[in-house]
Image 1: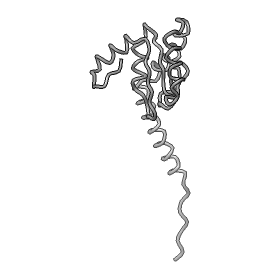
Image 2 (image 1 turned 180 degrees about the vertical axis):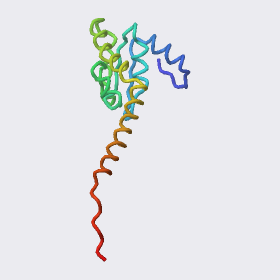
Image 3 (image 1 turned 120 degrees about the vertical axis):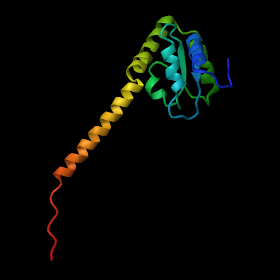
Image 4 (image 1 turned 90 degrees about the horizontal axis):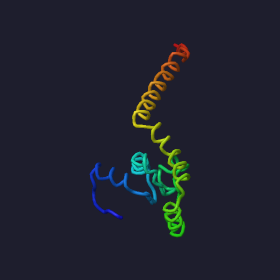
Length: 140
């Protein structure tokens, strides 16, 4: 069912929990947060994610999602059929790949990684500054 209106976080979670499949057909995008939210809400149901190959999340969730080119309508239709008729074992396997990623790479992980990288860069800069040779004396 297509919704063209803002929805609350609570409503989004409820829809993600109830949906048998989610289809995200971004033509270009940095990161599809909705794809991650859908996977997180599907811990029990193990719904199938159909994801545009142009979405940023495709690189992270591609091992479990059905990747599509949204410009190819036949591919989109085929993916919808595949998702709605996917055997339970395959759904579980695909979901397992994606939920492992979602559980590992949380906002806490990314924040700690970012701060660690900043500190590493600061330490490396300090070491380079200390290792720099003294300037040559100027001729008078």
